[in-house]
Every structure is written in C-alpha cells, then in structure tokens.
Length: 183
Length: 235
Image (tube, rainbow over all chains, first blue to last red; front, top):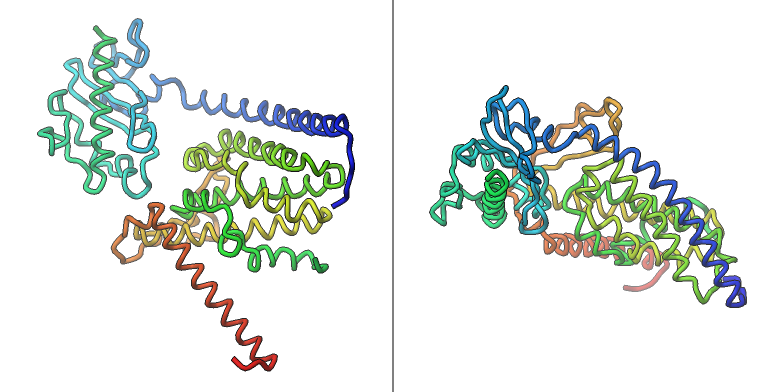
C-alpha cells in the first residue's frame, strides 16, 4: 500500500469529494428509477382498479371509494351497490401480508386474494400458492371467520396453520374496518 | 503475492478462495436467500454488481485513500453501489426486489465485499482487482445457486430453473423453458422425493453448507495426498 501521509484537511477534503461524487451518482440513479416507478404505479392503477382486476367482488363492474373512507371501496354492478372491497396490510407471521377482501352488502365474504406476503418459503407462503385456501372464504360471514380448530369454517393449511390463522384474523380485521368506514 | 494471470486470479476466486466454502464469509445472506434457485440467482447478480464496482473503484483510488480513513471510504463506495442496485431492482425487477427484501441493502455490510476491498483491491492494480471481483462473484454465485438448487429440490421436491430474460419488452425472471432454444427443459423439474420442509428453513441451509464443505474438503485432501505421494512422501 502506498503510504500517503495526509494532513487532516486533506483527509477531510478527500472524504468530502468522494461523498459528493457518490451523491451525484445516486441522484442520477434516483431520477431514472423514480420515472420507472411512476410508470409502474400508473400501469397498476389505483386500488379501485386493482380490486376490480382481482375480482374480489365477482359481479362488480366499478369500485368507488366510500365517502370519507380510507381503504373501503363501494362495489357497483352497473348502478347497484352490491358490496364493498378493500385492500389493506395486516400482520403475518414473518412480515406484513397484503390482503384484498370483497364482501356483499351484508358483509359476507365474496372473495379474498393474498396480494403479497413474505411468509416462510415452502411453508407459510402456501397461503398465496394454495388457491383452495383462500377460496374457502367465499360465502362465509363474520361469525364463521375462524379456523376450524377454533370452531370456524376455515380449514387451515396443514403445516401452515399459523400463517392461515393470520390471514383469517386479517380478513376479520379488514371487514371490521370496512364496517366502520361504511357506517 | 506471486504474479498471476487474469484468468488465474478468476479461478483462484472461484476455487481456492471460494467466499462461502473456503473463506466462510457472508453466510448471513447465503442462509437467507438460498431457499430457491431464482432467489440465489437474483442475489448473485446484485452481489456481482457491487463486488465489481467496489473492487474497481477501491483499486483506482488506492493511492489516494488515506490509510487512517480507508474503512469509511470503502463503506462509502460500497454503499453507493448497493443503493444504486437496490433502487434499480425496485424499479426494473419488482418481484426480485420483493423476494430479496432486506438482503440487498445488507450487501453494504457483507464481509466478502469489504474483505476483498481491504485484502485485495487496496493493494493491487485495477486489472487484477477486476479479475478478483469476477472470480469471487462467480464463486459466490456458484455456491449460492448450488445451495439454492439443493434446498429447493429437497425442500419442495421440484426445481424451477429461472433466467433473467426480456419477454414482450418486459425484463424479468422467466422459467428457462420459456427462453428460445431451451424449450426442451422441463419446468419445473419434478423429483419423486418426499419434500423435507426443514431444508427451506435456516437449519436446512446450515446442514447443506456443512455437507458441501465436508465434500469439498475431502476432495481437496485427496488431491493433496496424491500430489504428496507423487513428490515421493510416505503417507
């Protein structure tokens, strides 16, 4: 290694110079990536468009944010109000799980989609990969939304009961929020 | 250090100085993201970008870096590359960004990268440093993908070979069978074994790493024995 004996001023100058160069490079990258991210967000559309695409309320043709609401969207078939949909983050076993939930006007579930999750690969991630699991939610009212071990109507995935429980609790939580926002 | 050819440096990084199996560095990301082949591949690519960038710039600046503050400067250089790849992954490969999560930002404190900056790039010219970066990256990638494949096969009973590819103008990870010329590769490759869930959890990574290290050690020792015998030693 070349031994350079620098004065404290020189050291500070060099550190600052490198930091400035790094800042310039990062600013440029930030600009490029933000443009791309904006494009992606536009392509994905708002929550209303995503709810429609996922079909959590099967007959809905349009979603509209509930007046004064934050996550709850009214689902319309033509001009008739047929239910509500919401997309929200709930606690999972490992990390946040994003769920989309659709209900009819009596708050009976019409559809649930696991939008994103970070549960244990090969175990908890079955909540997203096992389509049969979320399909069970359709047609179940609030009082049935428990794992069958606890007297509910949802069968947990064998080997992944903890994550299954978090999803079920998450659906209940989201429906609770929707009821609050609607009333 | 003896003079070595460019290729020699690369091979040294892959075999003699393999970061995972020989230097036993950077095990944290190795345990976390070697759950499947695709994750391993994504991590290996992010790592390669940072490793090369850091080695090149540390080597270029080596005569300018005041020895007393070299570590902060290394970290600054590494941070810049990590932040760049993190932002680019988020924008251009969102699924990979989701899968790798916190482990891309954590490349900043990956001891392989800073270890090579300190032990190699800071003392060698640019070309050998590039060779070292390539070798270490290939070594890391090979270890990660080998682990990822073994754990995916034993843990889920199938292997999905993924490749970075651009399809319909969209950059992403696609199954190998979707890529022209590779359509003969089955997707996923099924194995008739009972999946052992423990293999996709961190203990599975330790077991796999231990087994592979043992294997490589035996192979290395055998080779050494043969060489010693050839040189006329009694064993």
